[in-house]
Length: 117
Image (cartoon, rainbow, N blue to C red):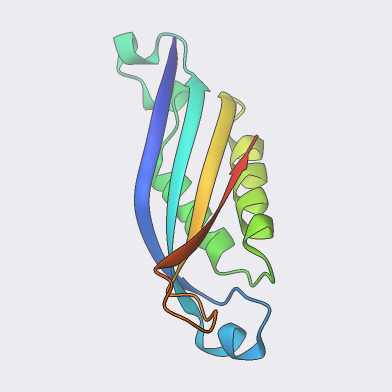
């Protein structure tokens, strides 16, 4: 059986950006994640071991968010690479990383990058 797992609006403070100040003070981010997962009969058996543990996914995203990057594309790519390595059940995935109130010289609510695998 294939299921879709989504973790939405995970919020982090992280040191991403190409400006030195961003790496020191950080910015606020939202991360939205979608995983298409082949889990066999896990729903019928009520078995977490053959599914994907949401807590583990969150912790892996949080870990990648704390590693500084110059560009959001790198952050998204790292998140998906780590998740696919940890969970071979993942068939496809996408992650949207949004920087809230980015320092672009004017009022901008957020800038987002979506990476798919």
